[in-house]
Amino acid sequence: MKYRILPHGGERISEIGLGMGYISGSEQEIIKTLDFAIECGINFFDLVTYEKTPYSAYARAFRGRRDQVMVQMHFGAVYDNGKYGWSRDLEQIKRTFQWQLELFDTDYTDFGFLHCIDEQKDVDDAFRNGLWDYMKEQKAEGHIRHLGFSSHNPSVARRLLDTGLIDLFMFSINPAYDYQKGDYGLGEVEERASLYRDCERMGVGISVMKPFGGGQLLSEKTSPFGRKLTREQCIHYALDRPAVMTVLPGIRGMKDLKEILSYENAADETKDYSVISEFAPSDAFGKCVYCNHCQPCPAGLNVGLINKYYDLAKAGDLLAAGHYEKLDQHADDCIQCGHCDKRCPFHVAQTERMKEIQAFFG
Image (cartoon, rainbow, N blue to C red; front, side):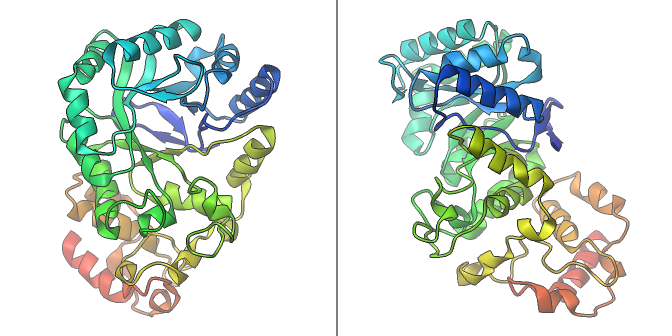
């Protein structure tokens, strides 16, 4: 398992985490699945599920190793009737948070998230009814280590990012949503890409929900593109976006978990998602998505990483220039052979772009 470092806090987060939404089976089966996940190095778990029942299994699986796992608790996901519910009632949310802390025999959550912030009204409600103030109080008292939120909407996400208090947030990322296909494909191509770059510049991490588009992308029949992608392609795509810390696919049980974990040992060609160029919209062409389909570069340049640091530096990331300088080879090492231009599925004129990058970094 590979790990990524949260900029605000320094925690090591497994690049593959787990969503709780679809898990099923007996309590023992769920515990066995979670035990295996932790043994394989997964240390990050989202705690929103379709009903209350799996919580007891999670609590038992985490018992005695609270310091080995990190959790996202959502302020607004409630289970008063045993089923998942959505609420903005402050007292109900407080009761749910206290129940979760007692169940897990802990006095804190690693990440406290405003739940499902998809419209401007959701932000206004959280600010006006005292929920956001309550969460800030809990952070000040140590019961929340990091503040965050979950959202599908890039414009709404920016309003919360503007508070300067967010360390990590949960966002839906996959090729379909980024290229405006599917129910949560909110925002133009560049708006979503800009959000990722700005998060990396600000040191705000992203935990990824819906990496498979709710499973739709894994089947030719349900994919909005009419073409299926593999789990490995979808996970790799999400992990390649700037600011992403971890991908949180939902699993039903052990079989799903093992299929997802196979990503860690998959060959590079299995992870290659450049096929998305065949169904991405025309306004995505000419933009490097860091897929490295142009590799190997005859001159040895890491073309994707050079482009990524350039885009981040242009977006104002003060660290990106330093990261660029640490590369073994830079844009001025480009020999202008045109190999990358011919291989780029998004028709990026990389040879010209290398001149642009060289001029930018001096």
